[in-house]
Image (cartoon, rainbow, N blue to C red; front, side, top):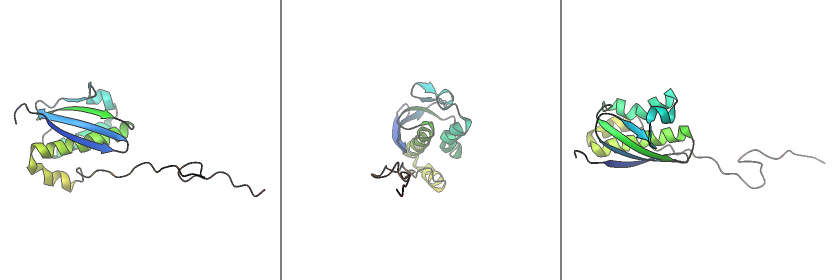
Length: 130
């Protein structure tokens, strides 16, 4: 397993993250930039690091990820799921810890589609009696 990449995919809303982990020093690169530079929001950075902190693997793996689609929050959620799935592929014993915290469950919430005859997904055009 030494020096070998482990690949996993994470999705959230419209965002798709391809995550590759390998044994290393804990460096995280997203779309060619450091995680802190890419996300820039402390809450999102903590969210992405959550699977690593729960499994005590924060400095054990180098993470390389490419993320496309969606906004910054969706991309952070996709990264979190991708990292959690990659950790399980690397070490099956981590599955129980990650599953119990809900980190292996894909968030199914998506944007509701616009319906015909309406202004948006639920908003209606103004009613006029005459």
